[in-house]
Length: 243
Image 1 (tube, rainbow, N blue to C red):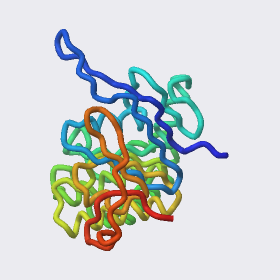
Image 2: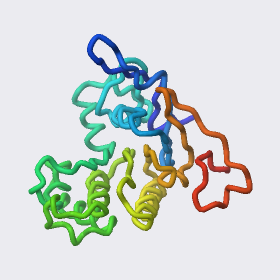
Image 3: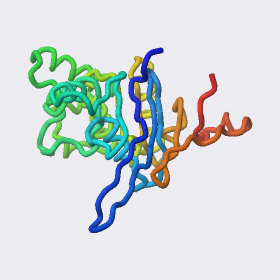
Image 4: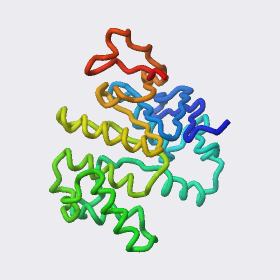
């Protein structure tokens, strides 16, 4: 049986607050398969961003393991771990580039440094085209509207052609039409065989996910399936999609 694309096993993480430790994640286990959309629902400050950063390899857990395609990320050499994170995991940077003067096109090319310039240009334009924001290529980040920033951030993650896409609160600040468009784009990415992990405090962003879990008190649980009469509602309570 093939290993999951991503598997978190008994992950624990705490932060120091003076003489005390604040537990954020307690023995969290989660898996994402290729082509699957997995959602994590939780209120703000529930630990969703910490969970996603650990899943993307940007932070290390205090305990537990993170496996990517069956490989323990913590056991990889620094060089191999960097290669996995750079080429196989797309982390959506909602904050944008460090310099707001950097143009969208130049920001997209940063993950492709060292590659052939023609290939980097092609992939950058293709990502912007796919996300519907090619007209923003020459604009600095500071000139972009909120909806454009979300789409450009997704393009910057997808330009790597990752196997796993990790997205934190992708629909924050967007109107209903933009939210639906972003959700549809994420599912289109999954249809291409990419594993997608989303965290959000908004049920709308997760309503079409294959699996949805709730994060509260540092623990992760799966909410029950919605009653049959509610499954056709515009916004369903998140649950496991029936086969």
